[in-house]
Amino acid sequence: MVDAPIRVRIAPSPTGDPHVGTAYIALINYLFAQQRGGQFILRIEDTDRTRFVESSEQMIFDALHWLGLHWQEGPDVGGPYGPYRQSERTGIYRQATDELLSRGTAYKCFCTPARLDEMRRAQIAAKLPPRYDRHCRSLTPQEVQQAEAAGTPYTVRMAVPLEGATTFRDELRGDITFDHNNVDDQVLMKSDGFPTYHLANVVDDHHMKISDVIRAEEWISSTPKHVLLYQAFGWQAPRFWHMPLLRNTDKSKISKRKNPVSLIYYRQAGFLPQALINFLGLMGGGMPADLEKFSLEEMAANFQFERISLGGPVFDLEKLKWLNGLYLRALSPAQFYSTIREGVFGEDYLRQIAPLVQERIETLTQFLDLADFFFRDDIMPAEEVFLPKKKTLPETLKLAGELLGVLEAADWNHPALEKALRDLATTQNWSAKEVFMLVRAIVTGKTASPPLLESMVVFGKARTLDRIRRFLDFQKKRPAKN
RNA sequence: GGCGCCAUCGUCUAGCGGCCCAGGACGUCGCCCUCUCAAGGCGAAGAUCGCGGGUUCGAAUCCCGCUGGCGCUACCA
Image (cartoon, rainbow, N blue to C red; front, side, top):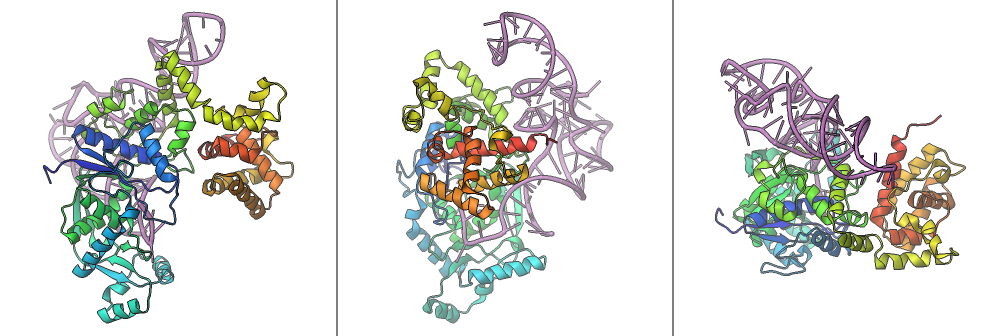
């Protein structure tokens, strides 16, 4: 293992927009591979078909490439250890599961979701840690056969040793120990035949010869399960490096509720990839303290893993903006022009906006009077604009809060958006008209605009959500009048 | 609740036993430059190094306890 070639990987799930946390971990993995002459691999972890989003995978590829992070092996470029999409590897997991089953380090569990639910509730009520009670672990072979013959759906769980403890080394923190009492009999294979993260991850990392697992801190508590799995298979475990989690201003794990986390947002909002990647490089230390502005190449040359600081860094937009300004000013006039031309006034973008205003203007220069909100950053409606006549301010802000979740969950096209907004109106007892007007105010800053839904589709989900978030934020901080 | 991780200015961080009554950057404020605004230059405010005990001639730095924050606690990753 010591002299095994360096191979690292990033393993995002295609469940929505590419996440800034994914970019952060990708960056660290990329730097690691660069510095040690290793391979950087991209693997798509699409085993959760309930959260799967079709368009997500391509967006992940695009966003990472936009940032300049390129991989040597992956679903799009191939490689010797493919396929690199977990949904195409189910046979491998099936085989791995059978092996565990035959070794007795895993067992079939026929418990219904209802029973598990009830069990958990009882445990919580009794102030016990919610954990699987290992009911099916003691099933006799005949009982298992019977249940199977009856066609009872089952999951496969890992048989965690009843005693002892597992210690593993985190390369950034040292040894970490978990008592087996505190390790749950994790589900490895779901009843739909797809593996859970834990199984797929360990199996793939082994088969893909991953030498170092560099991932976010949230995985520390499941690492003992992974180590136990490597042992159950008789495999050598990789090294583990757990990076600190990016945080919201309130120190909680960075979330779309409180921050723009979509890489699509940063691109559309006019951030340069060099600035974002530079900023990410500032998070959690790693670079010499006297360097503030640096390129990806400079990071590869100077980043030191021993310098990483473990406190979760707050993702502070203010500093990102400052950095972005630095990069913008460093552009030559020609570069700046083409950057603006493509980034703000992109051909495709203008082409979509034009028809929305065409029938509403009398001279060409009125174009911006109507379409300004597509290009501006500082849209913030006044109370006279966003507050419906028959609603109070608190009622309105509450609805705006709901808006965030509703639109987050919606598919970004006209019919889906219309339905989402109308449904929201119904459930909240608002008129559709009032809801549409509120959204119009937040998105466009005005009471009169090009058609709202079409505009939102063109404007994009990431920026629309950001506008709502900023609106909410602004209203919350605004001193209450009266 | 249980388990685990973490803890230096509002934020990102430097510091790895004496050079620190803690340095840099963002943000904030002031001054200069200037037709304006930025940018740029200069300067200021801002951290009893979470708290309490040790160890040591000496601790932000090592140890212990506490507190706090965060994460995990799903047939999500």
